[in-house]
Image (cartoon, helix red, strand yellow):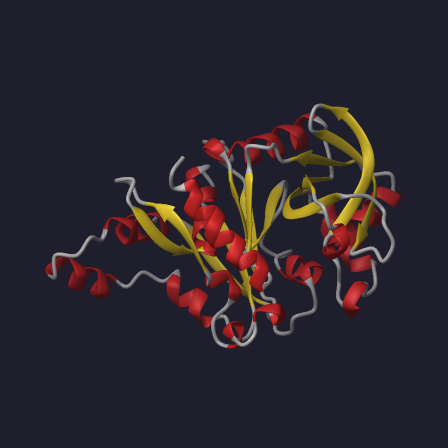
Length: 286
C-alpha cells in the first residue's frame, strides 16, 4: 500500500447533493453504496465515504477531519462504532468480518467531525479544516473513490508533491466532457506529471479536457489563498480558484494523471451513481 504515515486527511462531505434528490434529502450522497470485498474476498456493500477512509487508513493515515453540514448525521452515526449491534450479530451467527474490521480501524484513528453550517462550496469546506491541519495534508471529496492497485495513485501524489516541492498537487484525468469539472492547462514534465499553469472551475468555453479529480495534497498556503479570493462559480468559494491564485503568485502547482488501470468511482448524479455500481461490481472480479 501507499505509505502516507504522518499525513493528515480532510474529507469533505458538506454538500447538498442536489443532482441526487430526493434520495439526498435525508441520506448524504457520501453514504451511497459501492461494492467491495471483505478480507475473505466475499462481496460486501459499503458507503463510498467508508471506502475512502479505509483506503487512507490502509495507507497509514490516522488523523481524519470530516467536514459535514446539516443533514449529515448519518455519516457521524456510521463512523461511531455500535458494539451492541455487533454483539447482536455475533450471537445470531451472522458474518461480521467487514463491520468488525471497520470498527477496529476506527478504534485506532483520530476522527474529528468539522461543521460547515452552510454549503458555501468545496473551498469553504477546506477552509473550515484550517485550525486542525498543518504541513502537508490531503484533501479528498467524500463522493469520489479511486480503485488503484495498492493505492498507487496516492503514492504517486505524495512522491510528486515532495520531490517537486509543490504548494499543491492535484489528481488529474482526461475526460470527454470537461464542462462539469475544474480543468487545467500545463506542461508535462515527466510521464503522467504535469506542471500546471492555469486552473479554471467549470469553464463555459473549452480550455482543455484534463479535469481535476477532487483529491489533493496541499501545503498550508492554500488557506491563505482561500482567504484572499472571492466567491466564484455558483456564488461559492471554489478550491480551483484558490489553486489559480497560488499559480498567479508564482507558487508551484503540479498534477498527477490517473493511469488507464486506475478506476474512478464518483457519486454526483444518477448517471455516475449507476456507473459507480457497475464499475465497482466489475472490480470484484479482478
